[in-house]
Length: 400
Image 1 (cartoon, helix red, strand yellow):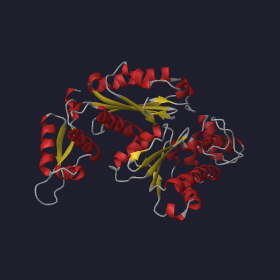
Image 2 (cartoon, rainbow, N blue to C red):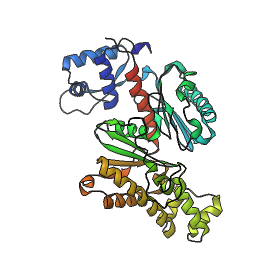
Image 3 (cartoon, one colour):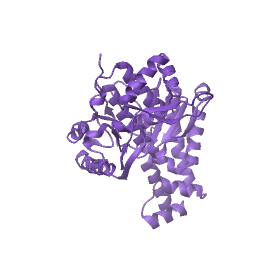
Image 4 (cartoon, helix red, strand yellow):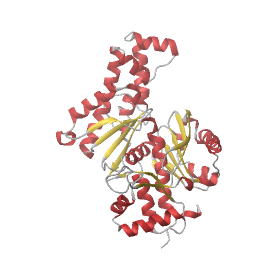
């Protein structure tokens, strides 16, 4: 950690730009920072000498001497990304350039409460660090995603519908018992949005990331930054009503898109179709495994099962109905959809697109692209690493 102390504001800005540009040349850094070439070269030389920046492989030549890629030095230490889902746990140890060094995923249940889940997190993390030959002091920063609204300043969940036992619990304080590194907690979909922003090297400024799993949430990127709102609950779109006569949601209201189109709703519709004799494929799946999930519905749909395709169309259409309102309001350039729903396949995406384009204003959708998140299952972990590195760079002491 000593290597961070005493760096100037310009040096910290150069580190942050290097992280976000992922392998830029000296010339490109000078352009991005609007610094002179001589100033940029001097800053880079100093940081390379200190072992904070490293010059990696050569870039493709465009004539003349080939430029070297700059990146944060791997000797700085490691980042930890923790993605806590409603039913899963994904933990990774990452290099400063976000390449995973070790990773572990397993099923989990957040309803068991923070004591049980975080005890498991601590055990897994110790095992992963040991596997990498890294000790706790070499952890630079820790980023954590959770499926609920988070007060970003305090790092605490606020009335999380899917995980009520976590309300006001300090994850940060618990992990401080093991690590001196700063700990940052955010909503899981905000982290997915951060992951996409990093993948895109900030080339898109206004887009949405929708996660459809046990719940439905939205990460908002506005003017190139994740937008969290006044109290940290921006993007809680799962509780937008899509049917006044719909079923009651666990939040207490009726007809929320989450209770009608998220993973559990798809499973509920599929089990009903199996039991009612509407779908032989789903009935066979239920007999064989005793359960049905969204992936099974997708398989049945692709095999031509009419009932499965009807369920996929309905869920996609309801999600699109909600998104149409958000699109009219926010006018994003792209919507990336992630979470367990992506296993269903192209029919769900087609139903979402049709519903959005049908219901949104022509101007809002003229250049709108809707697709599954390219980062896929790695979106949450990548975003957790981005959060850890970005916020660690911000909180490090800067010399005047």
